[in-house]
Length: 617
Image 1 (cartoon, one colour):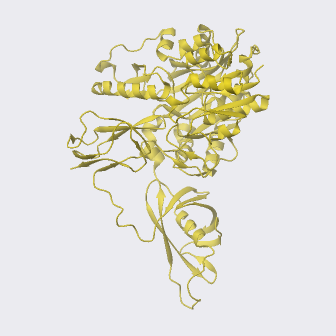
Image 2: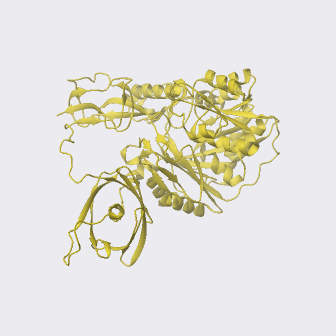
């Protein structure tokens, strides 16, 4: 029996495993980087061990340090979570060699399937050895890991070498393995996967299907179970292939077999020899705890001959600290409040936490279950719309609009969904009364100057900028004997954190929260983030034309060949790459011209807004 378990991971992943351990009476051990010293998963564990440093390569990818941490803390088992070393056969072997129980598949199964190249060979599929123009488009893909890191779509043969180099660098940074391969890129298919669970006694459960077609940068955004619209024949084919992959490797534990479905044809993609981020939707429809079953299998227990029957439908949305309208740029800062009512919320963050640059920008997973797909989708969209998310810019509005888009509600989505619809899904649509609500809450309790007179008072004005679109708004109001008023709007009630406004005979309540110069206004019409602006703008706050500013905090990983001061560059030409939150972000020339200043060099850490380069006409 497992008595004490170390989770070789962080954030939401570790907290998810810890939750089951508490229910089972198993003691928990956390590991943490310096950046995560005060993280929720560290606070919740019974014991915690420091991994010196911040970068994943120095901390969560150091299997030797993690095994030592388990032994030092008295753990008798290790759960790898998902990501980092979860599909590293050497780590699995090291855990077993140290006399610890490995909560995962045998290292031989990981070796066979964790490398996507070897997995395809096992399933009789060969990657492209040589790429010609006739093969385009192709996908460059990391052999290890997942989450969209180390993946590049190539549509022009001239870009292949550069994308291969970028994918290798990103894969090595994220997974400690720079191996990549090339395969045909199938556009606009559906990403469908089968959850499996196997024991050491020959039983393999195919636990339904999931659809994960809504993706950005090859990373899943919205997932659901079961995958809608599959014929019984296609579902049976997917089950058969998934079980065949498990039996071919003598698999044990939880795993996922992924496919790209085009029409009635399923193309094998890979097998992930670990629990997946989206496993909660499977748990919800089957009424099971996959982590508890993983632990049971690791202890040698046998599964029942058949899995439980599924019921209803579940949908999961990943809430990221990112700006979808700015190329999905990750965001950092303090998360002041995170509250998503009425649904399951798996999160690695807590109110007051700092969202930094070192790790994935996912804040939480919101999961809704209902008897039907339509009801589950409606429930999740409503919960996200009512959520209070105060802090960095997030993709919350994108999620709500995606869930309500006709293609999604009609189950007609595919992996090209965001390529087609992103501009419409990210168009700014702020509540026009949100700045007024913020201004009235700010003015509450402040006395006006002088005594009351029988003449109309002059309006007061307060300026705000909506985030992240940067539009400026002016809210005007008056102090009167009857309180605060505004032209064209009925001011029903005002307090420092709550304003009720009437318009067209309809009253709505606005909740106002202030954190420094940032104001968050939540109403039935949506959420608005505002920055309070000074009464008089700073005349020195100007930037030289052609300045390239860091869109996010991160590390300069490389500068393009030939880019230096005095070099001529073309509009859109890649100049340098930043690494932030485990992804590389390309910075391109804003216009054709000459590089008159270059402040970026490999290894330099920059804050958001830092001047990287200047390109002059």
